[in-house]
Amino acid sequence: MSYNVNEKGYYGEFGGAYIPEMLYPNIEELRQNYLKITAEPSFQEEFHALLKDYVGRPTPLYYAKRLSEKFNTKIYLKREDLNHTGAHKVNNTIGQILLAQRLGKTRIIAETGAGQHGVATATVCALMGIECVVYMGEVDIARQAPNVARMKMLGAKVVPATSGSKTLKDATNEAMRDWINNPVDTHYIVGSVVGPHPYPDMVARFQAVVSEEIKWQLREKEGRSNPDYVMACVGGGSNAAGAFYHYLDEKDVKLIAVEAAGKGVDTGESAATSILGKEGIIHGSKTLLMQTHDGQITEPYSISAGLDYPGVGPMHAHLFKTGRAEFIAITDDDAMTSGLELSQLEGIIPAIETSHALAVFNYKKFKPNDVIVINLSGRGDKDLDTYIKYFKL
Ligand SMILES: *Cc1c(COP(=O)(O)O)cnc(C)c1O
Figure: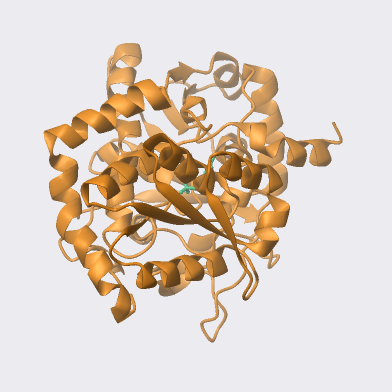
């Protein structure tokens, strides 16, 4: 059984490239070049130099003593929250901007929901002096004002998507339309392990630096490079893909993917894609997605903007279907409580996305000698308003 992508762009039955014919040249150009370019020594050198000096990698692997004591097991936190811009997303945008430059592209487009990927994209465009256009639903622009301001400060143009529900999927449609109209000079930076092949594989490879570091860091601390569990939250699935990547074929390492149950899996206000989803096609790939009986995409809900995506990347759909990863859904309430708990036990305020992964300790029992690595995907600064309202701080 392989958990990586095959030559045709599939993870088992999931993945592929279901795209309008007009997009074919863009996707084909990427598919033919991404492995070759990213393997070049000069690419690798520049990628790793920027990750080190600009992003601040390697991020620490921190043994969380008080959290471990509370749950009577050994918990390590992979500190992606300490990256420049406050989350893992920049690992991918650095990789893609370097690829875009080598493909001769002079203009970048992206879509964003909560604004985190938009900020990570605007950041690398400023770094490289490249024009940047970010599509964002009109509703999200109103909800995520600080991130809109950040993108503008960084020199990006934020274009509102005014059709449909005026949220992420509408912004994605606008970005696709732009790319079709500007196939020669423009690269589309996708923000997670979603979209048509080769995006899921390309983004997973850029994020794989996370598990590459965990391996040597854990060897230093525990004398072995494999933990018993790796755990991460899943929106589209990129931080989890990065944390799982070098462990996919190591059967002694159990993988746990944590989704947002929202107000509860059965409430109709949820984003637990693997449990609620059925096979379908979203954003150019065959995967699991939340849909009605007649195949309309259901609007997802989570208190955490980064997890409220109606689909999941094809790698994760395959990990779910094959049972390679265990999927657990965590409610808003449980996530918020665990976010506060980490703040007070370890002095680390996590992003609400990450808080979902932390809440698993209340539901799953681990042995005292189990070594568990949690990917701490981002910091909570962006979520302070939500924490303030929820806890009446
Ligand atoms: C965007 C985001 C996520 C969810 O995206 P993935 O692609 O599933 O990683 C999780 N955590 C943080 C902090 C984010 O910004």
